[in-house]
Image 1 (cartoon, rainbow, N blue to C red):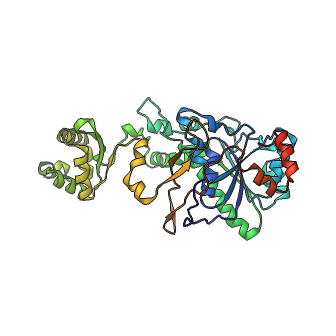
Image 2: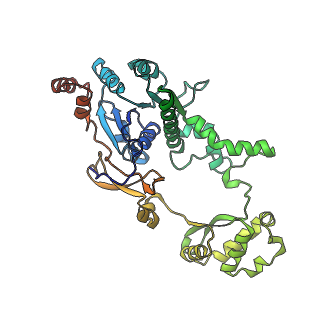
Image 3: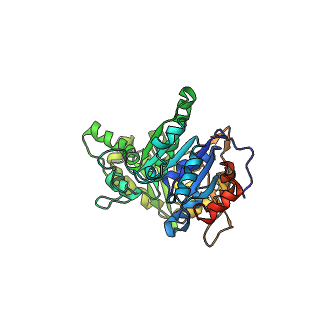
Length: 401
C-alpha cells in the first residue's frame, strides 16, 4: 500500500462514490473524484474488470485510471449480487457508470430506481452519444474521432488519423466529474440529486468547435493540421544534427527579431519581405527552407539552449517513456509511485502521472494503490451491514468476489 500523502488536499473527503465502470471513460471520472479525496468503490465483474488483462496499448489502462479506489467484485447477473450492489448504492452520494443504455436498468441500478429510495443521489452516466438518433450505436474513442472530425484534422489530407491518446475517453470522464461537482453544489442548496450525462461524441464535437467557428467566420473549411494555413511563419519541427528533431517557434515580430539575433540571422532580419508576421507567412515556404538548411548542422541541445536563454518557445520531440526522466516532473512531484495489482509485474512499484492541478500549492497524491480484484469486499460488505456468515455465503455462491 502506498503511503498516504498527508499534505495533499482532500476537498471531497467524506463523499462516497460507487463506480460501475470499465475501460477509460468512467474510470477517469472516478479517479478525479478519488484524487480529490472521495471514497470511490469500484464494482467489478466477478472475474474482474477486463482492462486488468489487456495487452499492448491497453496494458496501462487499469493502473492509470484506478488509483485511490477500493474494489469489490459483484455478479450483477445473480439476484444476490444485484441486491448487494443496490444496498451499496443506497449509501452513495454519487453513482458513476459507463455501460450501454438500458444495462443498469436490468439490475435496478439506473437513476430512476436508485433515486426513488435515495433522492440525494447524483448519478453520472458516461455514454457514446447523448440521447438521440445515434444513442443505440456502440461507440469507441476511435469511432467518434472518425465521425466527429478529429481524425480528419489530425491526419494528413486523405489519411485520417486518431489522436495519440484516449482523448475523448479521458475528456468524457472529466466532464462527467465536472457535472458531478456542479450537482453536489446544487444538492447543497436544494437537498436533491440529479442525473448527469457525458458522451464521447459530444466531447469530440466540442473539440471541433474552434474549427466549425472558423468556417462560420471565414467561409473557408479548416484544413487538416498537417496542411493547415499556419498563422505563424516560424512554427514547425526541424530535423537537425544527427537526425534529432526539435520544434521551434517565433509567433510575434518581437520574437522574430530575438530569433534572428540569437542565431546570427541579420540578413533575414533585414529583409523587408520578412518584416512582419503576415509578410513572413506569405514567404513561409522559402523562409522554412532557408532555416532548415541553416539548422541542419546544429544540435538540438544547442538550439534548445539558445531558445531558452532568449525566452522563445521551443520543445524537444519526446516519446512517452522519456517523461519518466523529465527533470520538471521529477522536481515538482508530477509523478508518483503506485504498486501494480495485476499481470507479470504485479507487486512492482512504478511511476504514474498525477491529476494536473495543484490545490493550496500541492499536487493531489496517491492514497491507495490500484486495487486487487475484491481487495476491499469484506470491509465494504461489513460496512453495509452484512454479518460475517452472510459475507461467507455470498463469497461461497460467487455472488461476490
